[in-house]
Amino acid sequence: SLADEVQKKAKEAGLTINGMEGQGQAEWILIDIGDVVCHVMMADTRQLYDLESLWGMSPSTAE
Image 1 (cartoon, rainbow, N blue to C red):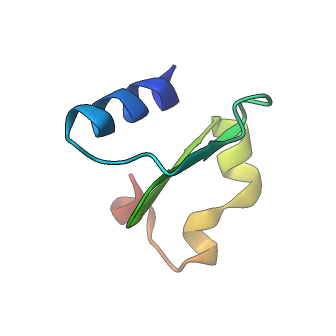
Image 2: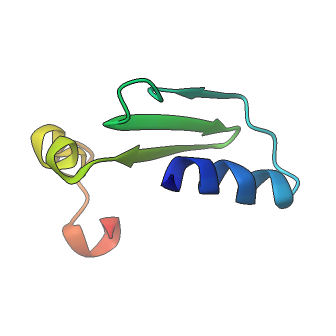
């Protein structure tokens, strides 16, 4: 999965994975990589929560 690949690449880069949540539902997975939290979500979930609007980001900077 994409989340597994992010975790693999982060480890290869020498980064520490502090935690991972949401693998059971697989609609929204959070990967805590220290200074960065990576959000991996299904398209429907992304549309539902609309985080780009919540954080004031335009679609061009969020893609």
